[in-house]
Image 1 (cartoon, helix red, strand yellow):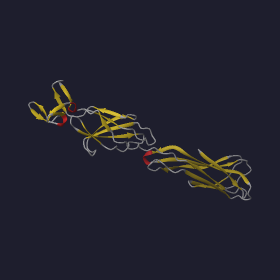
Image 2 (image 1 turned 45 degrees about the vertical axis):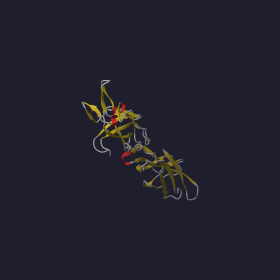
Image 3 (image 1 turned 90 degrees about the horizontal axis):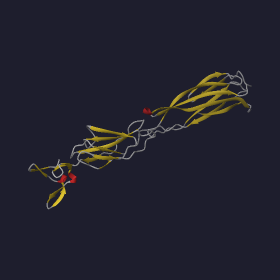
Image 4 (image 1 turned 30 degrees about the horizontal axis):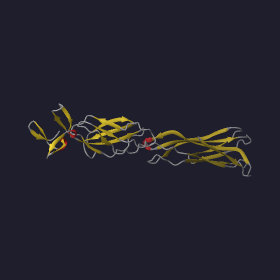
Length: 265
């Protein structure tokens, strides 16, 4: 809690035994949805020697005020207090806060005084930064490996990296999600269709919410052809077939099947 005190000064210049104190503290309560933090404040009057008694005083601050009160010997008197919200900007920052307590007296011998105290506003967490586009490797007819980097966490730990598969090049329409741990940097997907185009993006998530979508990555699975020699399906990119006196990947040409030529799929 930030706090400060100031002595009330008599009009003859002598220091009064009466002091005033103001407290200002960040409450620990944040409202992430509205990007704001809650501060608490209170005001007190302190009589350190007890030589002043029964003097009517008025107090005020920028957050509230009160009427006459009387200072009892050797006591600390709670005058009042309250709370107020501080708005943060889109990056989670807010200016430091201040509050000034002023006390005036109707007694010539007590005088008046004021004190100001400052409290720093904490930085408020935001959603993570937008991730870079994922990259692809190890492409097969039914799968591929997608990799990404983890972005800045926005002030709160990243608890999920979400990989999303789209069927449209603009990232609209149906999609399939592949949730991953917050520290994951890759995912091997194995439920894809041969010779099919897909578009991928990643999102980072923390306690505030999800980041903006990364740029999209366009990919295509390899085609499949029947290779009698090994009796199974293999990615067409791994099979070379004759064409114009040479050999090219089967995915690039029509290949024989059941006595006719068809697209590799």
